[in-house]
Length: 148
Image 1 (cartoon, rainbow, N blue to C red):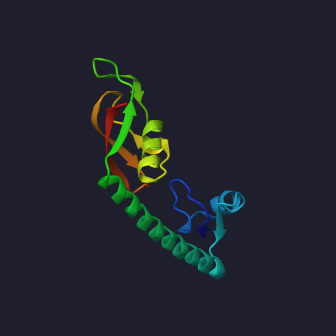
Image 2: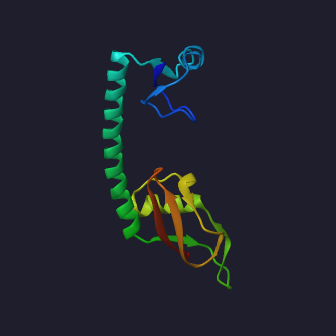
Image 3: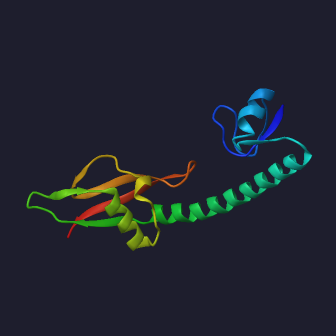
């Protein structure tokens, strides 16, 4: 039986793909759960059109992400922190502070959960963080921790 997947199914395929499955699996599980449709002519055309639209959206997203990547690479973010006499920070710099600094300095909103710090940042200096903007796009961000 040939079906068109309406969503990603693990170990079977991605949304919009046409795959062959055993008829019982398709009729009794995938179709009733709304995960697939029988691959007739009209469903094939709909799936192809949705795939084209998704590719167009992906291209627009990638062009916007490229602008964000360029702005992140070209700027060095400065984060102010309270410092003791020995140069150590009271506490540590968090991803939330870094996300707020990026938003205020270069007007790019980034979710703090997408920022990965290499280690605990407890002293003044220059560091590099990795930002996962998309499944295919990761960027290295240089930032400095300075005394307030």
